[in-house]
Length: 316
Image 1 (cartoon, rainbow, N blue to C red):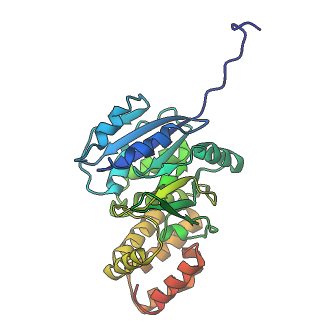
Image 2 (image 1 turned 90 degrees about the horizontal axis):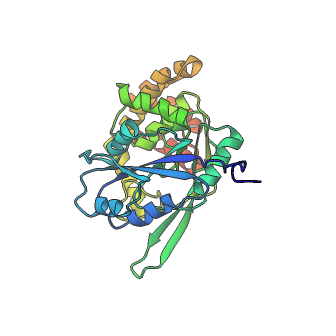
Image 3 (image 1 turned 45 degrees about the horizontal axis):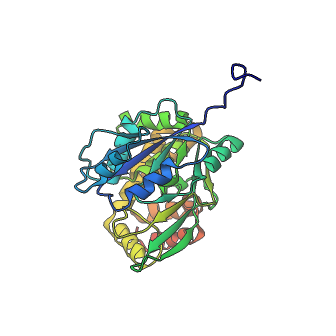
């Protein structure tokens, strides 16, 4: 067969990766190499930098790789505001999928091969995964821990939690367009709420199909500057207790529930409209109503017990 008649190899699917950065020079080179090194796909990495004062942008420009697109730098103040800027402004034309990335993790190089295959097999609109959290000790050795995020999804889990770390999210372009439309124009989008939680809530409230894969796709780096990080150990427990005591988490739940109610249709909409006001009050009747919903509000059994306890004690 001559070259003239030879069939060309099929084009690889393009994944557009949205990465928010801020003073990430210590980690961003390793993270970027694992993004650009993804197997079986083409990658476009779109970066939004939030007023970095270190060498983050110099490192990214130093790759000299046309697959890296750096948006005009801005000052956004929080990781979620920076990510929402990416959702609004990134060029995702030609994408077979759109994904989110932190600046400080390591991705398994077969990540997208696995996730795109699962999306096709199960006809999904989005997928996320469990992760392997890891800590680097002072001597350079590492400690790691499997963090399961793939407990069975419940009817209302998106009102209280995300589908795991946003850095594991992959969305179809159709779902991404729907998320972008809401984030661009909807008056109820609250930028104090974590971006990954907003994305998950929009998807679930509008009946999109989402799967949480038990197989880790990234090594989720833990360090003192994590915006959220792994929910293990004493420090995260104290952070959660302070969050509950401050009332911020309840306000975020109220914001998500109100947004979800505005987006849903049919019986789901009616039900969410009844539930949303429960987060805006802390009286006995509202807490009793939320206690009845606990099995639907959290995926993990231990988290359900914790939620039931704080509602029963009037702490939330």
